[in-house]
Image (cartoon, rainbow over all chains, first blue to last red; front, side, top):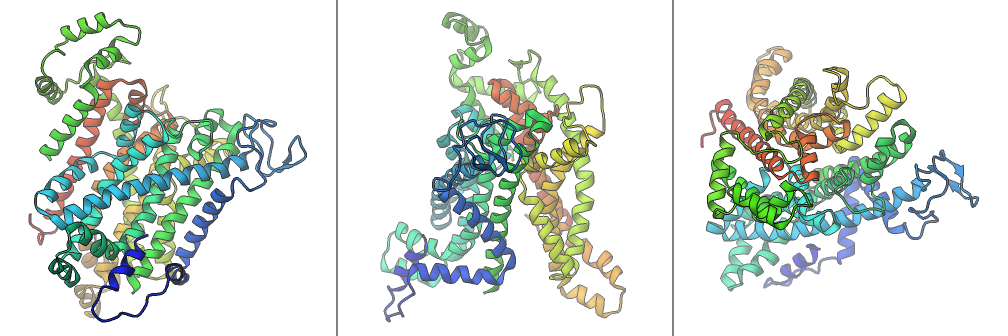
Length: 303
Length: 298
């Protein structure tokens, strides 16, 4: 998203610059770089797998994740209508495979939304604090420090219990918890970038501070921010799943991984599979995000 | 630090006690009438101005008086003390195991950057840190409780202290925390190993063991020290999930129950304590950092 803004600013120069390759080509070029990092490749594959699952969930030949079939069927059992239950059914007879896949969609959609909102606020605060400095910086940094001094989960639990458990409130809670951290990163990057010549050039042209922040500074800070966004998406998925596990997450009956584990835990050893499968699914997705972030960081440090 | 605590306490107070009738409703239960609530508010000094109430509340909190728990009907400070002691025991066991393991992992990995050993340790560290606490709790429970049957699945300690009940909660927290500290130690160690004085020491012909232990370690351990102190903040988050999962009677499950029940005095007290621990550990880590690294002065 930040890439096309960089493209327009580079054509402002007095001498005609060579045309940059189109956006999709540049994205693929970056992804091809990932080949150099085996860790990043594995991470990208894991993330891509779950994203595909999430996107394809409505198309795949799955049972309804809410419809009770026969309870406690083992892996590969036959469903009443003759189909195969690859991962068996849970205590209420719902198809576990279908629930895991539909969960990935729900979790990923809300996690992306929450991360994007947190980024909008975090980047706005970081830009203002870093570029304008002075009192703006003092006040914003102080409030960021106040919010960061809360242990994250406590902040989540308080916000969600005060506002009530719903998707939008989770977005609000994630924003409160993540925006200060994003603000710190953006502020640091901007402090470094604001003394560059192209910023002075824009100031001399008489551009407004907002133009400089959005068009000159942010696109050039994108490298570390993309790595951080990748990690943060992972954190947000964890947060949503953890809240689901604590019974404070996305409301039932649609499944999410945390809620699946929460429902299975009191049943003990009868529901071993029912709790292990979502735990594995969640872990693999988070592992994917972290490895992808590590791979991206490795590549960005290399050149 | 004091300023942050003041703002945090004010935010908490404003969040939970601005709506007076709501407070009375929480204390007297949902079936109390509006008249009853107003009498209660009058008797308990809730009709004073907001700021005056806040100052009184902070004064009481500083003396350790957080009021009466609505759910448990005992003074908050009493419950809080017991639960904090339990969580303290958990944390003690965790740190006693985590610090040596994480430092050893980090040092061994950082000694030869890019070696096979470094790669293996780094990937393990990423992997263990990636697994969210309640997922690893689930997996460990499935293996050690349901499959092998070695350990108890809950840790309520209802019949006195049993060390077996502490194993799984500590293991889960350990898996999550160890990777991060190990990675920080590794980065710091790798940096020190490329420095001039370590190269000089090796070239002087000092045995490699001695170079690592005497020359490199001292400077490499400064960064992990701060990270370990900051780990306390993460621990307070992790402890909620782990204690709820294993039904351990600690600080985290107390806060969780209080939040679900709407026990506002208990939530306020728990949050204040948690933020205080977090801010204080940050302060200690800053002070410790300047002591350990005399080049840094604030």
